[in-house]
Image 1 (cartoon, rainbow, N blue to C red):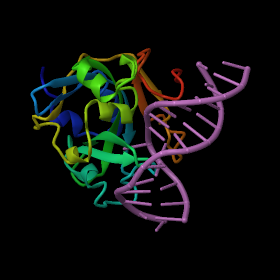
Image 2: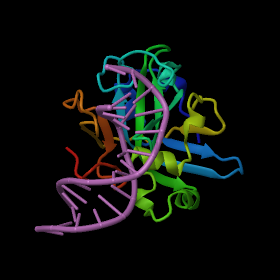
Image 3: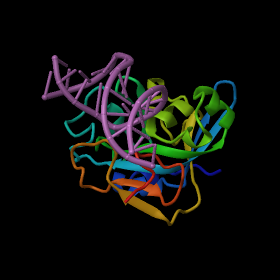
Length: 196
DNA sequence: CCATAGATCGGCT
DNA sequence: GCCGATCTATGGC
């Protein structure tokens, strides 16, 4: 499987977010096990975006958002869940795409082990679940998805059926339809399965 | 299916 | 102090 090129990620978050649909997130674990899932839902966070962690400038926490395109930005929400993002745009710009949900492809048994009781549909359905299924924590913050042999992105088939909708759980800029998902996929997250 | 509550803690106002 | 780019369990319809 061909890796996603850095040039693909070095565009605005609003361009990269829909482009990541259909791509595959892959992870090689210490024991050699492989985990893969096709991305079905993303959200864009731009530099001038009040909902973005980078909106008020660079801090130790969000530093990875300001790295080169392809840098992995991992943070903790609600004191419990980790979320995985891909830095986009130019160095020091502070833009990123949140990986919200994916359809499991390989390593389902590993994901199930990390998420006991979860249905296969729910293994990667939501940013916190996705991070847990892939065992992505703060230890992965700052890794380069373009060159890392631990976690990376692979090119996928072109996706034509894309739905745009408001981002989940954001208070500011709630009118922006900056959440992108593969239309009709049962692996998309959200309070309700219905979008639009 | 839908709504609500509780968990839990790092980072910033 | 306060508040999240969330998830799960539970209770109602």
